[in-house]
Image 1 (cartoon, rainbow, N blue to C red):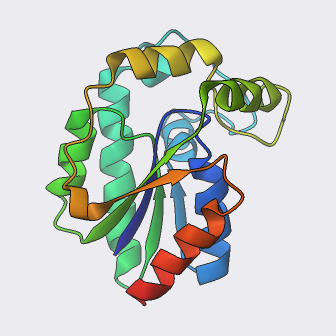
Image 2: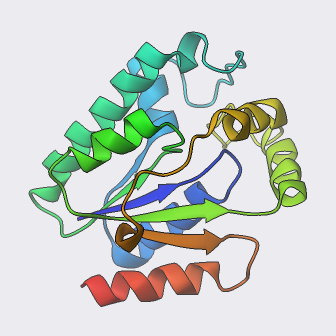
Length: 177
């Protein structure tokens, strides 16, 4: 089963996904890492481009998500869970998940704008953070978001500004074991 951590940039999905991956001792796949691996760019190098352009073009995004699903399916052969960490803000990428043939739970991560803005600004100075998202990218993601097409019974909304976010995700994950 895929445990999918989705949401706009800065929503806290990667933070939760990494923690849950360690707690459940299962593989973790991050779209930012896969995207940079495909482009042969070091994960420590930031690539700032306009929304939907270059490294973040529609074609590159499709390639990234295809790679994410293919790797995830392969890892499921030997693991009960695989953590998938990607925005899934496009309905096309959500449809790819629905059509993947893999059972999943979709954790939609969110937080108030002021918290996300603060997180994104801090990340720009963190050399270990592989994300290239900026406040401007976040605003474009929100502007272009057409909503979720994932069935409601598969979606769990997580307010990552809450201290209980990790506990809530872990509790749900334990029920799946």
